[in-house]
Image 1 (cartoon, rainbow, N blue to C red):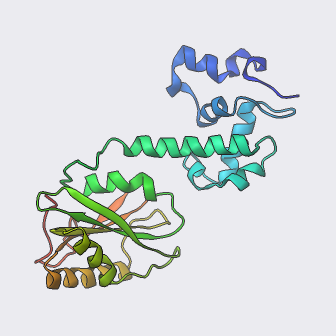
Image 2: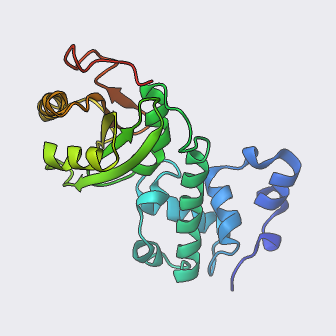
Length: 237
């Protein structure tokens, strides 16, 4: 026997609670329960939602980004349809979070750049290194992932970065990469890469205006911390 929302006690029904107090009154488990709709034998949809959140190993909904469909299907009461719905909800929330900034937007700070890409990469288990190409007015000409690495390292060469910049006819670039640990503090290798790319940019005549590290709801800007050379250091504008 499966329990539906209507079969739950009135004070435990997410639908009724939402109607009376608003969506913001629902807990993470209750929000997810609305999507799941039904539980399984002997459990309610809220119980099932709690089990899903526990399975992700995170204290909040962000774990839904990382858990896979096969892992979700290991939970009793979660089939491929429900697992796919959960993953679609996670992707929908990521796109909503990102949609506040348009690619036609004029990026004026490291914070705006970090916020634009944060939801794309803060949940990744691997490092992604990518380059943004800009025109002289600060409009984004293109962005491209240069390499994907392991949790601990990622290989990158000036050739890959500046080939992309040349193809986009960039006036300058910004280099970005994520830290899967969630801590945006730069490593010694990050400083070495920044110096190497900055020197290559000076030679190419396409300066690297910033190197931004994305963490979990945090970022590190080499420009903001004055960790670029004097010739490179500049505001993104």
